[in-house]
Image (cartoon, rainbow, N blue to C red):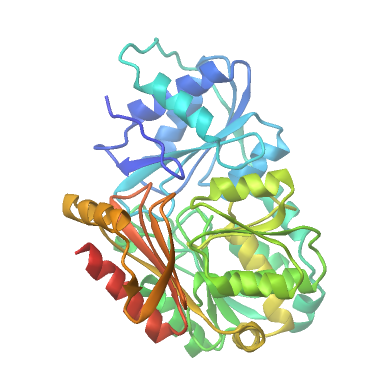
Length: 454
């Protein structure tokens, strides 16, 4: 049997080696035993075998007495999360590997509010699903859901102010990266009043030969097309549309911290926030400075979106964001939602061009550059990371180390930013996050961070 290990955002692995249909069925049966008589939403993205495995998961749930609702078409994770809330379901299961390479597949469990399931439940599911003696599984008939996207778009449109959009009618280029967001995000942006063109919108299990991860290197085509076509901005979403990236009218891919900062600035300026902001420890200080300039409290959490979702649920924050393109607004949901971020970016761009807004924010609160890189999690790299944790350096380049946080990886607070090493919970890599005073200094800091692991 494949061993089931839940990371920061579900169980993922190479299809047929680390993740398979039998394991997904075992998780489904374990979930049915944890939630007898419950209602569970099941959805899937555009990856190879995702629809087949989702159908098997739904059938196992139905056979165990669960009211299983199976989405009939590829469904973005934010849409599935909204459906969990709309149907008052007890849980959700999404067959997706999000932004991982094409050969990956995975499974994410959603809690009753639509956010990622708590660690205690995932631990219980893994224990049941990994037991050597497995109970007999029977198959039932789940109920099909055909209107999941309709429910989501209706809720999204209710949150966005269309007046400026209707006046400006901005042109937007959407890169769906062959993922599940195609046909949902572009539809929402059109209904909001934008003129939308789509690239890489056709479903492709191979995602054009690369990971559906909206990083600058993978968005060169989008950036060039935005600049050449004179679009107001470009937007991209990952494989299941829970992450996003923005490209301004000049063809520059904004960093995750810049994108999050401008969204926080816009929503705060339009007086739609009552509470503060929750961000992860790897998110750049630009976001925090913008929030505090708008008189918002800021809560810092560990990596992964679960701690951010808890801050939203508890009422400590209205907005949440992270360093990898995750964004959530409590008014719509508790988990990350790249399509919501794109709709708010449209609203913001109709009022002020994105490049002008980012420049203004840098003038008002100070500029900073934040980014990330990764290296394979070899045994040697892991040993090196352990040595860094045991004896943190006193300097990174010319920057002095002011403090070291070893709670989740190694995060060094510097006199002009930070550097942070952490093993990924979903891929066999060690990620390096960093902040520096400028883009050039950031590139050097990330290179130095990678070099230390080599």
